[in-house]
Image 1 (cartoon, rainbow, N blue to C red):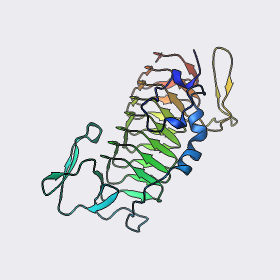
Image 2: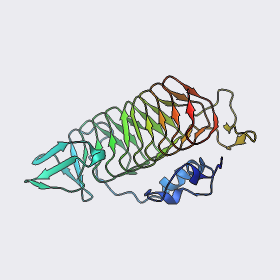
Image 3: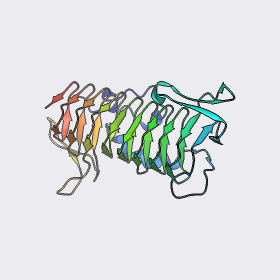
Image 4: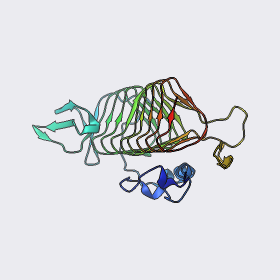
Length: 265
């Protein structure tokens, strides 16, 4: 099985494809993530001066923050374009909703169009959230997070130094550290991506040709496009899954390289 990044991900439509070298190793984007986010041109949101929860719901429209008063919000599924905001009966196309009770820490946070951020979500800089994504109640984005379009960071899901490609979903009670989710990846409730070896040292990826040193102290999982995990599954540090693979519920996936369409049970 080829270890080139293009074997795992189709980045041709991804808004941040410059971070991905198609001929690089699948974990290569994580090595450049911090620098990419540091150089990104973040819009100035002019949020109310607070280090705590927002006192009221705000609407982000055309790079301006609007108060909720006088507006009508339809809380449909944001990932399907059904989150809608109206003013005097007219649709504010692409408006995003940041609900009262959400916490945004830092100015280097980019929020795309049609995004819903629910109460209790905590987002640290630097973070980019793509169009029509949902950051649900209790989600914790710990910084250095790159979230694509139509993604879900779900209830009580913690994300740290990780990348979601478009349509990736971690809907419920998940942990993702130093991880990449490919296009249309779906994590079952309670999925955990372990990223640190108990015995210390760099994370190695086992392969048929012997272990591959990543040079990384922390590396969670690399999940190729359209991979799925069952509820309460766990991946060991350095788990690399080819496209359309499946981890069955209540299963611990061994670290190493797993070919396309692998079934781990």
